[in-house]
Length: 304
Image 1: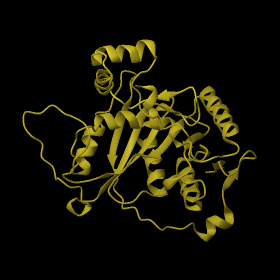
Image 2: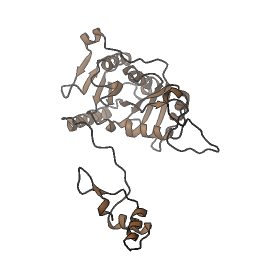
Image 3: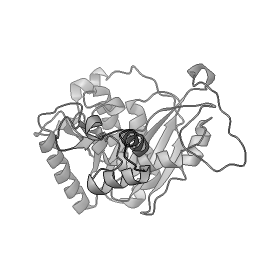
Image 4: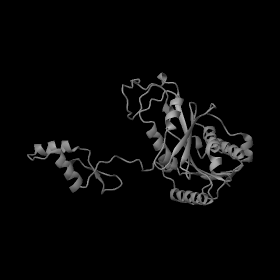
């Protein structure tokens, strides 16, 4: 019964899977004149055939980058150096954007009544969207999230790092010689955007610190530490919450914690961010950016 409804992995012929349930298999076995309950079928599947319940894992990269492994090795070396010097290492990214309003969200919560939301998630019924930008301190296992209801821009990314420094960084690192940023290749921190580099240069000037940037290769954003060290726990803190306002999101995200000691500081941005900004001619002419000799499109330093 299983052999007739089994498919294999396209990349490994030794991995097989079937989506038929033990009850379906038991009913089909009975049609053939045999007797087996679903529990017996499941025991045969797990103990004798070595099958277990799993779902597809999002791990296959969608893009190919020729120097993928070399860039990961470079990131590991730079991280080891900054750890040895006890200088800050930050992982930055935008978390999934959420509509604001009386909309349904996945997850359960304990309640003594019924939580009623709109039966359709039409954007016209809401009051904007939540854009949460995160900064995660790799060494101290703490983070900051800057929330806005406007646009996801490079200004927002640099403001989030600035607020992290004002709230947490200067206490943790009283005299650093530099700051290392890990980020992916897309979105507001796109490695091809001159606007992001100009905002980084302004941030380096304000912090009076050189900011070294190491982008993860294209298609490898899930390896960014903030994804599996902070964002997953923020998602858990927001499960079942109806995000009607930025203040509701702030209150629940600030409750994010783990047994390992993670805590997250949350702020609502006081600025309005607009898309469509371009780098200034002065920046393009001066370009206070030092590009690394190794993969300069992914590795560079903004000078103060």
